[in-house]
Amino acid sequence: MDGYRPEDGLMKPDKEVGIVGYGAYVPRYRLPATAVSQMWTDGEGGTPIKEKAVNGLDEDVITMSVEAARNTLLRAQINPQHIRAVWIGSESHPYAVKPSSTIVAEAIGAVPNTLGADWEFACKAGTEAMQAAMGVVGSGMARYAMSIGMDTAQGRPGDALEYTAAAGGAAVLIGPAAESVAIINGSYSYVTDTPDFWRRAHATYPSHGDRFTGEPAYFKHVTTAARAMMEAMGTTSADYDWAVFHQPNAKFPQRAAQELGFSAEQIAPGLLSPRIGNTYSGSSIIGLTAILDVAQPGDRILMVSYGSGSGSDAFDLTVTERLLEVRDRAPSTETYIARRTEIDYATYTRFREKIKMN
Amino acid sequence: MEVSRHWRLNEQRYALIGETCDSCGTKLFPPRDVCLECEAPAKELYTFTGVGEIYSYTTVYEAPAGFAEYAPYTVALVKLEEGPVVTAQLTDVAKADLHIGMKVEMVTRKLRTDGSEGMIIYGYKFRPQLEMA
Ligand SMILES: [Zn+2]
Image 1 (cartoon, each protein chain N blue to C red):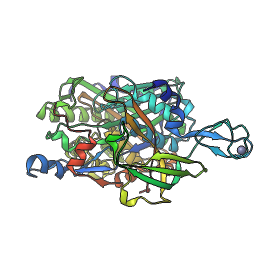
Image 2: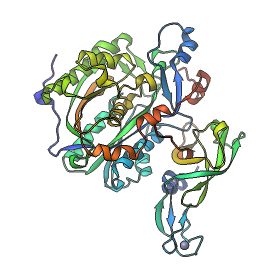
Image 3: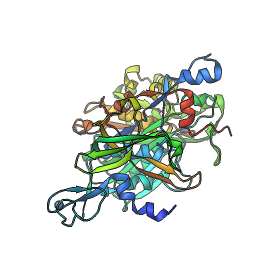
Image 4: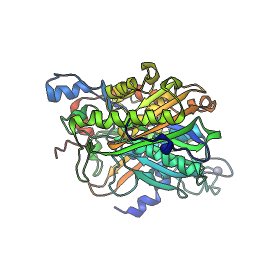
């Protein structure tokens, strides 16, 4: 591996922190990948996933974040007035200028004594917001901070991304380790200037560097971050019960897992892309919530996100006894995935607020 | 659109916050500061659970300005489990599944958008209660 120095890179706050509550959200509509291939390729060629989740006409990153945050608070059972930050990572904030976070903070009762900001780093904005929350909680500046990764991703009609660009995500409340359902043992980030995917300020759809998105972008960052995280913690893949990687499609996370020595069983509960698509900023965090829905106290989890541009954030977590107390206080991630209404391409076009070709 | 009017309504519109009567415990929504049952002052804020059932409903095909992009949609009288009846749009519901007495829960959704450059207004709607998997 080139260039990483785990002795310089491990992030661990002075005060131990963890996830005090978590909550997912996936909208109910599903667009089968075959509906896209029938529209653009006469159904020829394979599809990268089975189907993707699509938000309804009255849903956006704000409404979806409100529900994920409410589920998080149902589990955490804390006074929302004690939250000092509501941070939302997304590349589909409804406003270009006006924070999504203030609306979500208002809706969950966290205003006015709170920070509120929107984060942007392609698909890893949500996990970076988690690391920032670890910092403010771990320093004692805050007792709790809410970090959310949520997207209603857009793919240009006919583009490869149209099969997978999906809607969904999750929230986590970071707080003291003693109150946590999963303690964060440490985190590590690997970031380089890699132009694999971007969207200019006034563009509706993103552009990408085609084949550039695989090896030098996704695989390099995800596997390097995972290896550095494990080296810093003195672990190997065998020390983890579960792992979850960013999921731009079904294949990439499975190959990354294999390269890193993780089995199909270890990644199974968190591998959601075949059934909901790529939820961008939500992808790795909602995978983590699905793992927390089935994990047992003592289980160890590795989570690695990926954001184009590029970077990966890795987290090493250990589940506590408290998970079993709080798990059933809010709908499971599977509850949302199982709530499924199939739509056709015409309905999809309407839901995405009309096709804009430029 | 009056931005300030929407801003003042945020609390009750995003989170279904009403009031409770100190003397008889009646829950009020929307907040009106005086108990409907005993006329005592009711100023204690109360956050409704958001759970209720459909009391009656009607489907709107000819939507008023600002709502046309959502048509057809269903508006219902929802009887909250604490007692008050509220008027709200239903969402995430198939017409064939709609019925009086259907269990619903509050969600926060987009209510309307003021053109492509104006404000996006958020507020409560109701959807069929999630079936836990
Ligand atoms: Zn009264």
